[in-house]
Amino acid sequence: MKKTSLKWLTALWMVAVLASTAAMAGQTEASEESLLSGLFPSNCYFSGHFKQQKAVKGLPAALSSSGDFFYACDLGLVWHTSTPFSEAVLYVNSTNNFTAQDDGTLSPLRGVARYIMSNIFVRLLEGDTRYFAEEFAVSQEETKSLVLLPESEMMQKGLEAIRISKSGDKTAPVTLNIKVTDATGQDTQVLIEQIKHYNFDGKRKAYEQCLEMYSDKTNWCQVLRSPSRYDAL
Image 1 (spheres, rainbow, N blue to C red):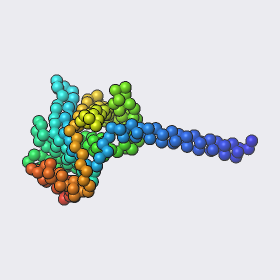
Image 2: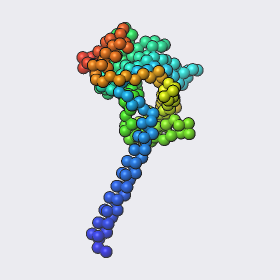
Image 3: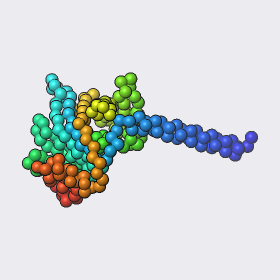
Image 4: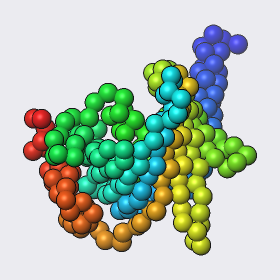
């Protein structure tokens, strides 16, 4: 057989292998997205309460906090911690996000907090199943919890795993439990509960609902509506 024929057959074989690999990857991601869609929120506007516990090495007990939140897909997120102290994270997108103190002081969100909000919590609230299917290996435990393991070396440097479970149905309140384990083995656990969905549509209605929820902190909602006004902070 001529060398050119061998090269041609080799090229065809490589194309077939690559096509098969791509098809298998596509099927895997589709399967992972299907698993995720059963847990992730599907509504564009909702609010709720949360309880958070963070294990810190050297401390005898986990750090606990609680609060409430409001999310609108075309406005952003108010993540308000009420105890043990009051402050809020105001998240519009990966560029515009702030920490708001109870006295009204705003400062840009930076570092690990910005990364976690941008790449985990906000994408989860958005129901971005494609992102998690592409960036994580997703599997289901016997307890029905989903385990998400980061696939990129860069993400593995800071994150070990995310575990997500959901409870409740049409007759019982829905709760969402998220446990984030960092690369050092420390856990941050967030329980989202008392979820309330809104049937309105549009940024203006979302802004009005934000004002209703945070009537004593209206500047929080104003930051979400016009984040560019606060970029110079």
